[in-house]
Image 1: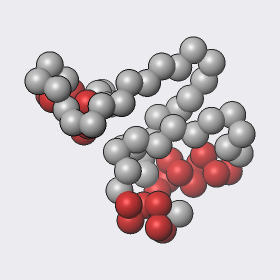
Image 2: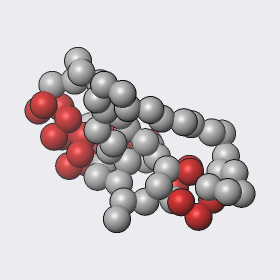
Image 3: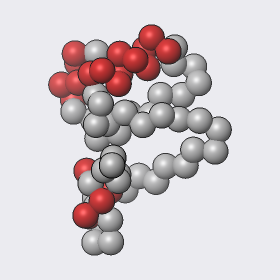
Length: 65
C-alpha cells in the first residue's frame, strides 16, 4: 500500500475481486483517488485534461461534493 500511495494515482477503481478489507485499505490510503466500482459503472480516462473538463478536478475526474 505504501508503494501505491507513493505513486500518487489519480484514480483507483477496485473491482469485484478486491476484498472489502483491501478496498477499505485503498480508501484509507487514497481517499481522493478511490472510486467505487459496480455493475454499470463507467469511467473515461484521458491522457490530459480537456478544456471542458479541466475544472472538474484532477485528471478530469470530478471532485467529490
